[in-house]
Length: 602
Image (cartoon, rainbow, N blue to C red):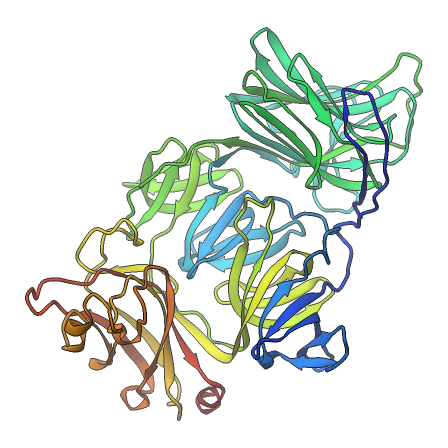
């Protein structure tokens, strides 16, 4: 259970003073509180809670009323200050985008023909996403993975050089393996195939908590300085009561010691021209000027004073090592939604069919040949866009956002059905991605969208029109018409609602640029079910629509049929130019049933 106390800053090795400030660990199970914004405008403090019968209510701190039903709540917000002592979430190396503005951060396990498997967040929850629903899988913007090692193989990779006393051994918890250094004189060195000018190094390490005179172990970041090697050393045990930082030949590092509780912790060192920043569990350990050359190697080492005794029941342990390079992302890439694309760190683009990927790299078929690329070369994968329906999900739908790392990171966001609540967080069932838990300590906000049944018909962005529009995705229009199909088993008594996320749609509202022409029946985007027009998209747009808007349009029941149905979008020209088309974006297409309609169709 990682926890720490903060000490005041010191420079070099001269400690000024130590002030304990107890903080809780990342594995605690505490029911986090929220602020509920009710639909009548009131704000109430409390927390979501589940009951044995599976129902979920909001329990108030005041006890009056003691519980509030979900249908009375519009939004939940994190209670400011309530989780200040919760550890910050670790930055995750991969970002997966699917649906309209939904994203999940984590660590890539695999990509195959049908699925993408990731581990989400610090707790490494496994999740499997339908590949056909995914728009992109990218590394953190401006970052490329140079090296990763969880030491799962009994033999170290070729880049490692292990001296006696350094071994790859199984973890005691039976979850993979780790690098172990025996006290005394042991060393493991990692040489990079190419220098890293700027980026970050991350690793998990075990803090022993016991002190042994004359013994210590550390990790050295070895840079190519103008006068030889420059070393930034992070000492992680055993003779001192807190980690320390030393600069050998490089810039001065100002250090804020963190006294750690025994257990596993996460070290992150960010480096580049002009700055070095070191953190443990997301909390500042040290900062200073940047190295004067590129990172060449890492060295994990244990050493002892000449007269020190080697303890027999202690060893340094390292796991989950990552080295990331920073780079400038390419602007204005070409987009072809009809095939897969590798967007390279160099700015080049490769189109073809991605056959597979894992945490090390990607395999893509180009013109009949298979090529392999490491993640140090690939900024991200952008997948071919094919319409794919989700399974219908019923229940209380929510849109939830949560923290995923440093404050500069965009939050993760999904829409799904709220299935349960416990001390760990909120269980959400998400189309195409199954069920997983959003950590309660990382919640930003949760919008409650109501009780309904929803089925996604197409999770991908489409561009209808006739002009290249850089602000739309894709910039090149797909066509001026688009069709998706869906199947229903029974005709509902109440209307089914077509739900669209749309942008740049011209509307009929007073003051709109083309309002009069639209009302006269021109320049419309008509909606058809099974070949018959039932409405026009433009009638539901109330403003300039330059930011995405969710639009709901009833579908007449008498135009539906049992079995397969066809939904079509058809664009019309202007009165003076029949070839003109309105350029607009459809960002997601879905169907919704109310409770009554759902009951009739079930």
